[in-house]
Image 1 (cartoon, rainbow, N blue to C red):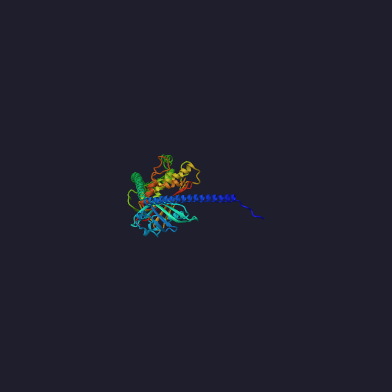
Image 2: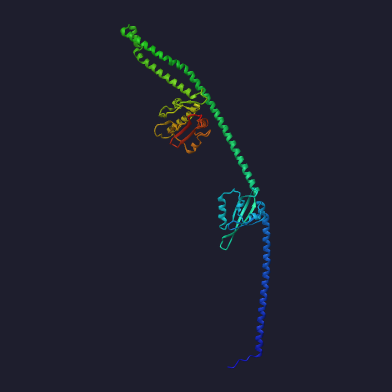
Length: 474
């Protein structure tokens, strides 16, 4: 096979094509190089600009804020000058330490646990922290902690940016203290007003009780003299009557047939009936005068006007005197069956107390118990007979307890909590002052150093428990 001939024209054409391609490639390279150089210069300018902006931001941040950086374990690796100025520690003293160096002890352990729980999960934490400077003074900072994360999303550094807010916090605390002081003064003023009302009501009630006591004592004294006169003469009347009847019997024995005029008079005057009935009348009068004397003794025991000081007394006498005075309210009337009083008296020693004031407590509580059972009998289907039970006993060696319970309407929990408050009453207007139990509480608790408690529930009755020491000197 013969080789193909290449003409000179073809050679020139081939050479021209190769040189053209080479020129185009060189232009592309030069253009790419120029673009690369331009991009590099732009990147350098952008980096310089970014670095300058970051430097400006850092400078502004250093001037305005307290900046610190820690590693993942909380060890300080960087602090700015503002941090050093406010904490009064140098950079050498701070770097390598943790933030416990400025811990004031104000915040709880749970406070910092919550903070670390937030930032360790890669989240920003914000809050207000009270720190302690090197000289022992305290300052407040509004803090933001920003975690720096690695590729795995775990914190490797923490940037803390703080702004001092000590003046604002001091102003807030001063305002809070002022508000607290105003609140305390308002409460003190309210307490003073309530105490004034309470004292005024007690003075009025005490004056009423004093006047009542003097009236009762005076009436008892005035009644006592004529009743004693009558009571003392009843014995003589009885003796005289017996003597007269004896003489009449002798006349009838030795003169069985009197003259017609005397016989007619005996029949008209029903002498046999008089002879039988007169002793009964004298016994009835003696019983009545005894009853009046008991009432007088009870009135004098209740008033105790001659016993202003503490004195050892028999509490059962005071309770019985109160029941005797209230006897009319305990009696049956019409359809009302009356109140059954069950007394379960223990063996009590003489108790040192203000007897008149304690009788006032018995009067208030028993009167309220009567109102409660009457109200339930009137307004509700009463289960059983209205009843008040009074139980006394010695508690330990130094206390006595008097429990007065009724099976009346009872109280709600809300009413029970207010029952000893001054002027609180559940009775209709004009039926109660709301002072009886309040004054009773003061007499038992403040005057005698005892306890007065109330146990009650709706339709379950009410029980008042009085506890006082046997001897006030102890």
